[in-house]
Length: 308
Ligand code: SAM
Ligand code: SF4
Image 1 (cartoon, rainbow, N blue to C red):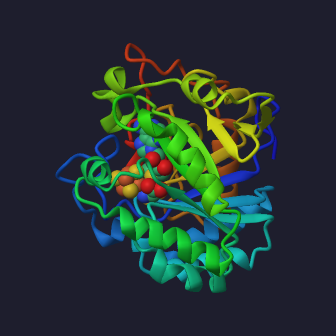
Image 2: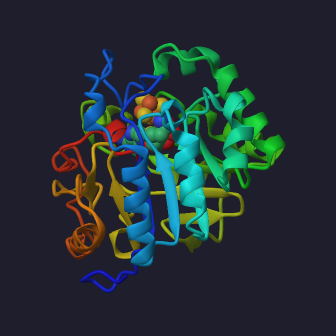
């Protein structure tokens, strides 16, 4: 389906839970978030209804996210139900902590590929950023995803000044050594990150310079240099090529990550559901306002309640 600006919308990101087993300091408050009532979260069947209606409108790619999606009860049913819809690409973004256990079942359920978020290769820094996580669990998860064939694997690293900008080369080496793709993502001033942003934001130009990257090719929202991709939502906003809508765990469609607007599709069925999805696509703004300290994201939700 095409939106009002002529952009083809063929990508749906589905957050299946707000819960997380880490507390990354730029994403979640230290105390975590208040647990919602079970009934506030979309049931497996409801998520599958939305996915089916979205595919009917031309969605060809679906990504499962969270919170931490591997914590979601019924996740394998969600994956297998979506896989049956026969789309081009079914992917999932995870922090990787539980992946060594779940890689094989996810693959069997029909998941095509996986993105693993990893912001540091230093175990102590990993503990600091995630407020207590064990780096080794993620490394084991990457190994399991590789051996199961959840490929191509992409490592997602949020670049942060004074936190991990001394690891740019180490990440590039790791990507070569493990034969996995790597993406550096600029820190966005949204939710928890608003208060840290001025101090930590570093443009991905730092990666280009430090690794001597040349001849980048625009692929979707990423600038691709071989197996290294740069996602520059702050320094090079890509609203003009935005192809996505998002479903939150409590049943709202977000037409734009950084805008306030949401459309609740909870309890809608059949034609009503399709109509609401069409409205959400038509409601996509031309662009969101600039992401800076003075003009941060307008999203009322933080990243853990959207899914990236
Ligand atoms: N828990 C899963 C994970 O960490 O991969 C999925 C949800 S998490 C919200 C999705 C992605 O959003 C992660 O790669 C995370 O690093 C990224 N993220 C969170 N807050 C961000 C911010 N302020 N700017 C850029 N990326 C952010
Ligand atoms: Fe959890 Fe992912 Fe947010 Fe980290 S980035 S706190 S793993 S939702």
